[in-house]
Image (cartoon, rainbow, N blue to C red; front, side, top):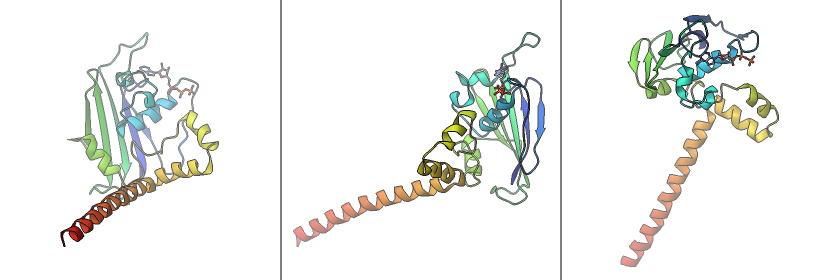
Amino acid sequence: MHLKSLTVKGFKSFASATTLRLEPGITCVVGPNGSGKSNVVDAIAWVLGEQGAKALRGGKMEDVIFAGTSGRAPLGRAEVTLTIDNNDGALPIDYTEVSITRRMFRDGASEYEINGNPCRLLDIQELLSDSGIGREMHIIVGQGRLDAMLHAKPEDRRAFIEEAAGVLKHRKRKEKAIRKLDAMQVNLNRLTDLTAELR
Ligand code: ATP
Protein backbone atom coordinates (compact mmCIF):
# COMPACT_ATOMS: atom_id res chain seq x y z
CA MET A 1 0.00 0.00 0.00
CA HIS A 2 1.27 3.46 -0.80
CA LEU A 3 -0.15 6.91 -1.40
CA LYS A 4 -0.56 7.24 -5.17
CA SER A 5 -1.82 10.74 -5.76
CA LEU A 6 -3.27 13.79 -4.08
CA THR A 7 -5.64 16.18 -5.82
CA VAL A 8 -6.26 19.50 -4.14
CA LYS A 9 -8.82 22.06 -5.27
CA GLY A 10 -9.83 25.22 -3.42
CA PHE A 11 -7.80 24.03 -0.41
CA LYS A 12 -5.65 26.73 1.24
CA SER A 13 -3.24 28.18 -1.36
CA PHE A 14 -4.34 25.68 -4.07
CA ALA A 15 -7.15 27.55 -5.84
CA SER A 16 -7.05 25.53 -9.08
CA ALA A 17 -7.18 21.74 -9.16
CA THR A 18 -3.63 20.46 -8.63
CA THR A 19 -2.60 16.81 -8.70
CA LEU A 20 0.58 15.50 -7.13
CA ARG A 21 1.62 12.02 -8.23
CA LEU A 22 3.43 10.11 -5.50
CA GLU A 23 5.70 7.14 -6.18
CA PRO A 24 6.55 4.35 -3.70
CA GLY A 25 9.46 5.34 -1.51
CA ILE A 26 10.41 8.82 -0.38
CA THR A 27 8.78 11.93 -1.83
CA CYS A 28 10.38 15.32 -1.29
CA VAL A 29 8.41 18.53 -1.71
CA VAL A 30 10.75 21.41 -2.39
CA GLY A 31 9.87 25.09 -2.71
CA PRO A 32 10.46 28.60 -1.39
CA ASN A 33 9.12 29.70 1.99
CA GLY A 34 5.35 30.18 1.96
CA SER A 35 4.89 28.39 -1.36
CA GLY A 36 2.50 25.79 0.10
CA LYS A 37 4.65 22.77 1.04
CA SER A 38 3.04 22.37 4.46
CA ASN A 39 -0.39 22.89 2.88
CA VAL A 40 0.19 19.63 0.98
CA VAL A 41 0.69 17.79 4.28
CA ASP A 42 -2.34 19.61 5.78
CA ALA A 43 -4.39 18.38 2.80
CA ILE A 44 -3.47 14.75 3.59
CA ALA A 45 -4.40 15.16 7.28
CA TRP A 46 -7.64 16.94 6.32
CA VAL A 47 -8.84 14.36 3.79
CA LEU A 48 -8.19 11.64 6.37
CA GLY A 49 -10.71 13.39 8.62
CA GLU A 50 -8.75 15.89 10.73
CA GLN A 51 -11.34 17.88 12.70
CA GLY A 52 -9.12 20.33 14.55
CA ALA A 53 -8.47 23.70 12.88
CA LYS A 54 -5.34 24.16 15.02
CA ALA A 55 -3.80 20.94 13.71
CA LEU A 56 -4.24 22.43 10.25
CA ARG A 57 -2.59 25.68 11.37
CA GLY A 58 -5.82 27.68 11.12
CA GLY A 59 -8.15 29.50 13.51
CA LYS A 60 -11.36 27.89 12.29
CA MET A 61 -12.13 25.01 9.97
CA GLU A 62 -13.30 27.26 7.09
CA ASP A 63 -9.75 28.65 6.93
CA VAL A 64 -8.86 25.65 4.76
CA ILE A 65 -11.01 27.07 1.93
CA PHE A 66 -9.06 29.25 -0.53
CA ALA A 67 -9.49 32.77 0.87
CA GLY A 68 -8.61 34.64 -2.33
CA THR A 69 -5.64 36.73 -3.41
CA SER A 70 -5.31 40.16 -5.03
CA GLY A 71 -5.86 38.53 -8.42
CA ARG A 72 -8.34 35.79 -7.55
CA ALA A 73 -11.69 35.77 -5.71
CA PRO A 74 -12.24 33.52 -2.69
CA LEU A 75 -13.82 30.13 -3.36
CA GLY A 76 -16.86 28.57 -1.71
CA ARG A 77 -15.52 25.10 -1.16
CA ALA A 78 -12.39 23.04 -0.63
CA GLU A 79 -11.96 19.54 -2.02
CA VAL A 80 -9.15 17.01 -1.57
CA THR A 81 -8.88 13.49 -3.00
CA LEU A 82 -6.24 11.06 -1.80
CA THR A 83 -5.73 7.95 -3.93
CA ILE A 84 -4.15 4.94 -2.27
CA ASP A 85 -2.65 1.96 -4.11
CA ASN A 86 -4.23 -1.11 -2.53
CA ASN A 87 -2.73 -3.85 -4.70
CA ASP A 88 -1.49 -5.64 -1.59
CA GLY A 89 -4.99 -5.61 -0.07
CA ALA A 90 -3.84 -3.75 3.05
CA LEU A 91 -7.16 -1.90 3.09
CA PRO A 92 -10.13 -4.22 3.68
CA ILE A 93 -11.98 -3.29 0.48
CA ASP A 94 -12.24 -5.09 -2.90
CA TYR A 95 -10.48 -2.40 -4.92
CA THR A 96 -6.83 -2.19 -5.96
CA GLU A 97 -7.09 1.59 -5.88
CA VAL A 98 -8.99 3.50 -3.22
CA SER A 99 -9.85 7.19 -3.51
CA ILE A 100 -10.91 9.10 -0.44
CA THR A 101 -12.52 12.50 -0.98
CA ARG A 102 -13.45 15.23 1.46
CA ARG A 103 -15.33 18.35 0.44
CA MET A 104 -16.17 21.29 2.68
CA PHE A 105 -18.39 24.32 2.17
CA ARG A 106 -18.30 27.72 3.88
CA ASP A 107 -21.15 26.74 6.21
CA GLY A 108 -18.74 24.17 7.70
CA ALA A 109 -20.49 21.09 6.33
CA SER A 110 -18.18 18.28 5.18
CA GLU A 111 -18.92 15.53 2.67
CA TYR A 112 -16.87 12.33 2.38
CA GLU A 113 -16.62 9.78 -0.42
CA ILE A 114 -14.89 6.44 -0.91
CA ASN A 115 -14.32 5.75 -4.62
CA GLY A 116 -16.91 8.39 -5.50
CA ASN A 117 -19.63 6.95 -3.24
CA PRO A 118 -20.87 9.22 -0.43
CA CYS A 119 -20.00 7.86 3.00
CA ARG A 120 -19.54 8.89 6.63
CA LEU A 121 -16.26 9.91 8.24
CA LEU A 122 -16.66 6.80 10.39
CA ASP A 123 -16.54 4.61 7.25
CA ILE A 124 -13.19 6.17 6.29
CA GLN A 125 -11.84 5.78 9.82
CA GLU A 126 -12.88 2.12 9.87
CA LEU A 127 -11.38 1.48 6.45
CA LEU A 128 -8.04 2.93 7.56
CA SER A 129 -8.06 1.77 11.18
CA ASP A 130 -5.68 -1.17 10.79
CA SER A 131 -3.54 0.29 8.03
CA GLY A 132 -1.31 2.56 10.11
CA ILE A 133 -2.74 5.69 8.50
CA GLY A 134 -5.55 7.70 9.93
CA ARG A 135 -6.40 10.88 11.72
CA GLU A 136 -5.33 9.80 15.18
CA MET A 137 -2.14 8.05 14.19
CA HIS A 138 1.16 9.83 14.59
CA ILE A 139 2.03 9.39 10.95
CA ILE A 140 2.17 13.10 10.29
CA VAL A 141 4.97 14.78 12.18
CA GLY A 142 4.85 18.56 11.81
CA GLN A 143 7.90 20.82 11.76
CA GLY A 144 7.62 21.66 15.47
CA ARG A 145 6.96 18.10 16.56
CA LEU A 146 10.02 16.69 14.84
CA ASP A 147 12.18 18.52 17.37
CA ALA A 148 9.97 17.28 20.22
CA MET A 149 10.36 13.70 18.97
CA LEU A 150 14.14 13.94 18.69
CA HIS A 151 14.40 15.28 22.24
CA ALA A 152 11.73 12.99 23.72
CA LYS A 153 12.54 10.49 26.47
CA PRO A 154 12.98 6.93 25.11
CA GLU A 155 9.63 5.81 26.59
CA ASP A 156 7.78 8.77 25.00
CA ARG A 157 9.46 8.05 21.67
CA ARG A 158 8.38 4.44 22.00
CA ALA A 159 4.76 5.62 22.48
CA PHE A 160 4.98 7.59 19.19
CA ILE A 161 6.30 4.54 17.34
CA GLU A 162 3.76 2.21 18.93
CA GLU A 163 0.95 4.51 17.90
CA ALA A 164 2.24 4.73 14.31
CA ALA A 165 2.53 0.93 14.20
CA GLY A 166 -1.02 0.54 15.52
CA VAL A 167 0.11 -1.17 18.74
CA LEU A 168 -1.30 1.52 21.00
CA LYS A 169 -4.85 0.69 19.95
CA HIS A 170 -4.39 -2.91 21.10
CA ARG A 171 -2.70 -1.80 24.33
CA LYS A 172 -5.72 0.44 25.07
CA ARG A 173 -8.11 -2.42 24.30
CA LYS A 174 -6.11 -4.69 26.61
CA GLU A 175 -6.21 -2.13 29.45
CA LYS A 176 -9.98 -1.76 28.95
CA ALA A 177 -10.44 -5.53 29.06
CA ILE A 178 -8.37 -5.77 32.27
CA ARG A 179 -10.51 -3.04 33.87
CA LYS A 180 -13.67 -4.96 32.91
CA LEU A 181 -12.21 -8.20 34.31
CA ASP A 182 -11.34 -6.42 37.60
CA ALA A 183 -14.89 -5.06 37.87
CA MET A 184 -16.23 -8.53 37.14
CA GLN A 185 -14.03 -9.99 39.90
CA VAL A 186 -15.46 -7.47 42.39
CA ASN A 187 -18.98 -8.52 41.40
CA LEU A 188 -18.03 -12.20 41.70
CA ASN A 189 -16.61 -11.64 45.19
CA ARG A 190 -19.80 -9.86 46.21
CA LEU A 191 -21.88 -12.70 44.82
CA THR A 192 -19.81 -15.27 46.70
CA ASP A 193 -20.32 -13.31 49.96
CA LEU A 194 -24.08 -13.07 49.39
CA THR A 195 -24.34 -16.82 48.61
CA ALA A 196 -22.40 -17.63 51.79
CA GLU A 197 -24.74 -15.37 53.84
CA LEU A 198 -27.82 -17.08 52.43
CA ARG A 199 -26.59 -20.58 53.32
P1 ATP B 1 7.65 27.33 4.90
O1 ATP B 1 8.76 26.83 4.04
O2 ATP B 1 7.86 28.73 5.34
O3 ATP B 1 7.24 26.41 6.03
P2 ATP B 1 5.50 26.38 3.18
O4 ATP B 1 5.98 26.18 1.78
O5 ATP B 1 5.32 25.18 4.02
O6 ATP B 1 6.36 27.48 3.93
P3 ATP B 1 2.72 26.82 3.64
O7 ATP B 1 2.72 27.12 5.09
O8 ATP B 1 2.29 25.49 3.19
O9 ATP B 1 4.13 27.18 3.03
O10 ATP B 1 1.81 27.87 2.86
C1 ATP B 1 1.61 29.17 3.32
C2 ATP B 1 0.86 29.92 2.26
O11 ATP B 1 -0.44 29.43 2.13
C3 ATP B 1 0.76 31.38 2.65
O12 ATP B 1 1.15 32.17 1.54
C4 ATP B 1 -0.71 31.57 2.94
O13 ATP B 1 -1.18 32.84 2.57
C5 ATP B 1 -1.34 30.51 2.04
N1 ATP B 1 -2.66 30.11 2.55
C6 ATP B 1 -2.96 29.44 3.68
N2 ATP B 1 -4.28 29.29 3.82
C7 ATP B 1 -4.84 29.88 2.73
C8 ATP B 1 -6.18 30.07 2.28
N3 ATP B 1 -7.24 29.60 2.97
N4 ATP B 1 -6.37 30.73 1.13
C9 ATP B 1 -5.34 31.19 0.41
N5 ATP B 1 -4.05 31.05 0.76
C10 ATP B 1 -3.80 30.41 1.91
